[in-house]
Image (tube, rainbow, N blue to C red):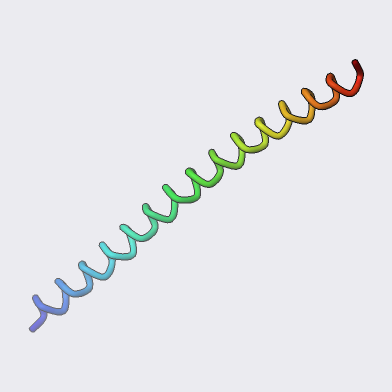
Length: 54
């Protein structure tokens, strides 16, 4: 009985750990996309400003 309880406790901890790792990976990915999108926007704005200047 104790063994089964320990095992389920381990499994739930493992599940939480896995979910945390997945959340971290998703957060990193979103952060990366935000930086890329921001860079593209900055380049686009600079390009538009250059076009307007001419």
